[in-house]
Length: 276
Image (cartoon, rainbow, N blue to C red; front, side, top):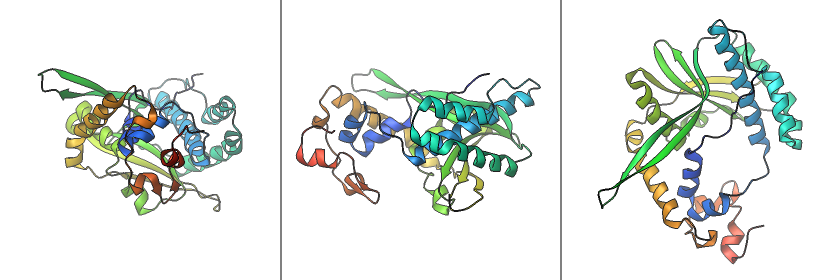
């Protein structure tokens, strides 16, 4: 039985978001592997469960035998392969929430077109010498579905609670502007947009909450998104090869000191030396 890759795409938004947030943060961060957090582990395991759920559903819709691991077995395998205590802590609870999800959406309303599909485009960057550079831009789409003659990209989002801002904060996210851009390139007027498949998971409550919402189409920002990609790629190219501390810092409170605490490189930027 097959096991799906639910990891990041080859040349997606995450690296560009980091360099736009702070070039020095990007340089310090790009070759490091950080300890996972509870939120990251819960989201990863839920993605694995839903990927295998919808992959097997697609087989059924095509009158084929399921060829992927069951969601339960896939989650257990992910936890074993990760070999980290947080995965052992959460994988059984993820299966419980997954079962609540399938009970909520008992009758499938989507026709499945693709699961965990990497899509791509190229962003052209003209130069003054009349040459042109092309930047690859990719996105891994959790789920591509057809519903009422429209095609949608679906993104699974696990959060502590489903609030208005849970939906609203993603409207101008580069992740979804990029998906809107690629979706319209692939499907034209048939593209209906991006659906957030929200999973509100509060450990203090016995039952999780679920909601699906189509993100508003930010037409102007989608049209200008290639400029954002070009800016980030130019910054990376300009400083590539330098030591991390020789990259410029953004030096503004939303990057250095946020509501979630100080940037992990705060002391390094302040005093110099190497981050440990």
